[in-house]
View 1: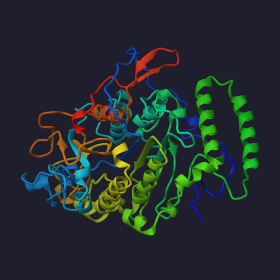
View 2: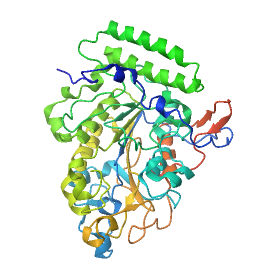
View 3: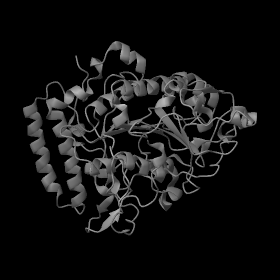
View 4: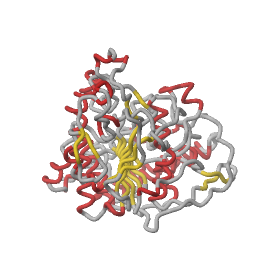
Length: 477
């Protein structure tokens, strides 16, 4: 039996909540920044990528322990891991990434990505800056990790791509899986469409550790007894309810909410879309290669969505809460405690297996040349070992470090095996050339052929979706 896209059960409350954020998100936020005028044309590739897959390592991956290693640094900086040679001429990786080392000729590494002291060091600001390319505003400093997503936020780069590229004929143009970071009420800002409208929000697919082959849309579900006709009857009921809502002050936002409902209904009622989500049909050997984990199967799902022509797919690393106590974290890459054991035992082996399989699979199917692959995070980790939250040096943790991180990029014409940017001798700061998150975002737009970054506010005034940053064109060709 194919794995169901939607949950097997549905109640009235869940059915009526057919939006990725819901009406609860219609709240006041920071004022819309003054328009900067029409957007200037940006350079693009002669042959733009058809899709982007953004793999986000939730929590803040340790750059100095993974791909910006400093074997000559003092022990209290370089840590326990040793670098190994790879198939990429300039790329050195951690010894616990042996499978990825065999794929290094397929990707480039960007070192010295920094917030320049413009963020807060918190996860929320790190998500926002690295997902939108925009410096976090003052509300992030005021509220820290209590800061909620606002309708006036700058849009996620995937939402911009979904807005600017022609819509997919049968699937959403932006799909996020296997979860929406983070647990309520601490939803991470930056992963939504914000000011360009909820119709450009991601379509979310949820996955679980218990059933990694099954993905469900949290916004709407259909039980086995729910026929297409009954679903259409309920759609008519929802339409009547939404007509009554149009008298609200937030009419435009409500219209966007309705568009989200319609998108969920269209996907659910279309039999032509189900094959793209049926990862159980993949050969056992290939599923074994990715690994029987939720993050591994999420990358396998991403490959299927690339094959189906979805323009932008986001995979947010799903945290394993069983490791949270040991690592002093939520179970992801936020290794405040026992950094080396947490990386060696839990994080690096699963990442190595899944991501190397993903690159190998895309390449083998001839899809890598037309797909941009991006691995990023909200921050790096402190180069000097010892986090006060886990007892200092004895706790062997690494704290947040927004002054420096690394990003991996592959496909879409990127020349593999190279390194762009450099950090100092202890991986604390960019050595000569700071690279900002807005430069990474502009590189995504460059690879996807997004030249026109103009949008209009509710009064019809033109503004640029991202004035700042320049694409890293030296990665290509």
